[in-house]
Image (cartoon, rainbow, N blue to C red; front, side, top):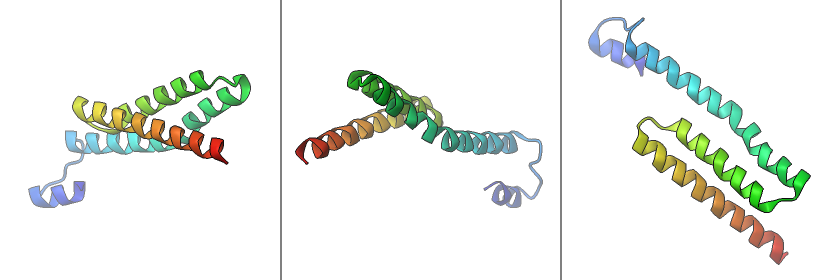
Length: 103
């Protein structure tokens, strides 16, 4: 995307805000994709050690909220992504409970 913008402007954008924002975006994407699996293990370990379903659900919602805040740019998008990720996590948990109790 930076190369395309450089071609359109017909000059190099090294050292500008555009390059800086591109690097920050890449860093945040790498960080979130690296940390996400480890953050997902924490509620599982809490459940295996303490057998507390309430604490596990609470920690899962908090971790999904934090990941939702990291992903998008503006505050409105962050809040929407956070709510979307938490609701998807709750639906996944309910489906898991439904499947395990009926089998």
